Image 1 (tube, rainbow, N blue to C red):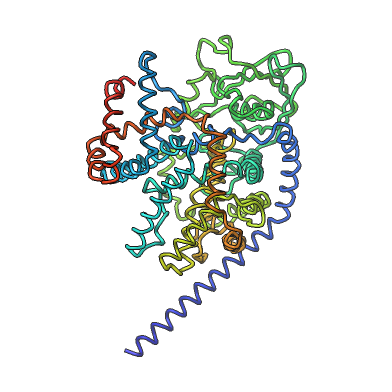
Image 2: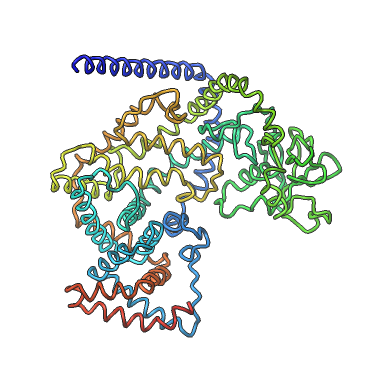
Length: 630
């Protein structure tokens, strides 16, 4: 028996030492690769900084395009919902007949008063959460409606959130798994917390963290657009994401075209494009440059403008697909500047799409036509043609050689990812420093909530620092910052292309890794994002630890100070929100679970005393005949 134990220990040690040696070897190889691309990164970074300076002057002139408070909260709370931009909370359109509007509004205001009764609201939430068909998605949406409906009294909203939070914590502590708390948004209160953080950190985003985040977004966008981007496969030569990497080498040349805008004066705008860009990509780059001092939401769409090339006395409309498009069997290639033989210094004219520019043969790039053609990726390609069924059979026969080739190429691809990473490093670091530095401004909500978590840990005799670290990580970095980092359009008036989104996801994952205390040992099977930031991750982890320690040592934020701060937010922004629409949408849940809610109120002594069930019945009677017509 002892011999078996000794052999087991020796085997374990050998395996551990072997894993450690492999870890050191991979680390060394990565450092070697990074060293090999360092000079290139310095040059790329210098070029990027020069280009960014031009845009920084634009930023200073037009300002960082931070969204107004209503649009920001609409996007954070409701854009991920199933209806997206058409969600009634974003459109604000309730179809109430004019003759009934006053009665409906009065009833909804009474419903608002009922929601401001803590006894009613807690019963309401508990009853809904006890319904099996009240899904996780419904909880998230309900919590967001509640946030808007109660925005006028954020101190009360915070009190409700605290009460529900204490109940949730009790459940996890009793079940002896407190570390799992806040891992997801499976309860109404968890989503309420996300929304509370979003509300309280808006001004901080606007005044502090917004600029480094915007510059990071712009730097990624610049870097991605400097190289070929496959319009069909959504893959780029310059990216941080290995799945979004354009593997094939595509020959290309950078061109500067001089663009005149129809009815836009006599001056031309120089725009940098690639000869392998599709016409839509060229249009987007032109729009980006010509309208750079306007918010993105005011830019014309690429489909709504025509691009004309004037090589001499003649003029030609350029389109993604037309009668000149290259065909090969059932495949059709999207037109590029190279296809039309557009050269450096060419003159292009951007104009609004007119009927005269939509020929009878309907082969031009008219709205709907290109979309329909691009929908079918089996027929249309841009830079890399997807593997055909016939080609697939051939490629399987040469699979052994292909595997050897792939192994050799992997290092080249990783070098390219490392090159992009090195170029963007300063921008990533600046963003991390802006949100993980307790020596700078710390929003009062963060200090207030972190202290609340510390107090609860002490109350429940939780001495495990890992648990408290996880709670804080799940309540702020993972709940708020990762969401904003992955979705810059939630805070800025920008359009995020899929290829840019792919790189942002890698940075967001690195941010998440930095917030965990678990050590991730590298191996050859490690995801590329972990290999990319292997050198920096320990430094980022220390930043998170120092940030949490720094906040703990700060002067506490009193309940009175926090309430004053919340009252200021309520005063400044409530009038701009669709409060009435939120109340109407919340009432739909009351209507759906009416009997269950009435029963819960009638069984609760406090609710009985305040006649809450009777008040709800009165509101229902006022709305009953009208809800179906809304």
